[in-house]
Amino acid sequence: MFNLGHLKRRFGQYAGLWVGGFLLSGAGILIGMSFLEMMVAVDWVLPFLLGGVALGLGIGVVISLVSSQTVGTKLVVLVAAALLALPLLWAPMSAAVAIAFFADRSIEYSESYAAFQIAVSQVLFPLSQALGDGELFGWLWSLFQWVSTLIGLVSALVNIWPLIRRVLGPEPTVEA
Image (cartoon, rainbow, N blue to C red; front, side):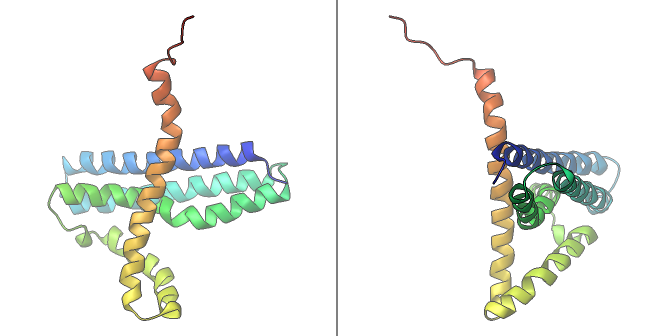
């Protein structure tokens, strides 16, 4: 049927990839801002991280597909990867958006951000047209941003929580 251990490992790797994409993007942009204008740094960092995150997701899916896992497990991995690809790609973007927000700059001036938004809109706009009027697209874009950020944060917290528990120490025992 399903190998829950394999699925849990893949979701853990997804969370690690999300956090890594977010942190590396943020660090790369901040370091780049030391030498370049912010939007130039964003445009240099984001394409590499988007490619790296997509490559990481693809490698995980291919490893699962060529493994000796059951067909059900492989299908779940494939469907989950398809559903979580955009939220995963949003991780480096969300770091750029956060830095732009705190720097009081408009991220829309970044060519990489604009290209990403156009690519996502080519996916979401036909959906909004099929489901209703054009105003639905703006709502879908906002929903995508919030859901993607929430998925990444929850997956990161779920995987970081055991580390936090180890740092805080073992549970106190009741002495008789």
